[in-house]
Image (cartoon, rainbow, N blue to C red; front, side, top):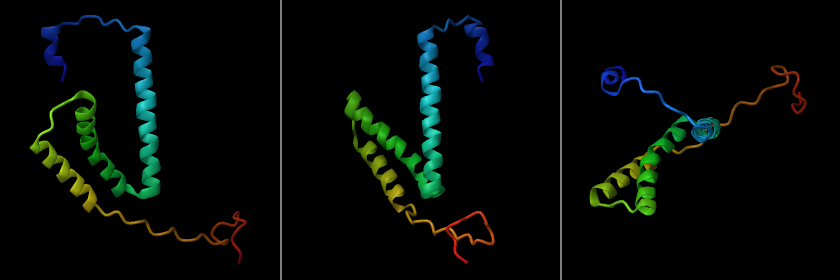
Length: 116
């Protein structure tokens, strides 16, 4: 996608200082790594459907933080949009997963806590 812009911007060199490099590494490792860890942990604990609904809350949180932290405008269409998102997340199936079947000593002879 950037190839068509090369005639306009040219191939100017970019200098990356140590401060920029550290910021990129922190954002890449910490933000991405922690996010993936929490996502997979949530999938294991709550299931994929409930984990997917967390993603729908991101715009609501972003708008709220913009209003609170940056003083952005809040209007009726924004409130309606946030309400629609919250109702949709509320309608998602928030049921618990059925328990996993027990493994017998025959299937897993290394388990010590299973009695015959």
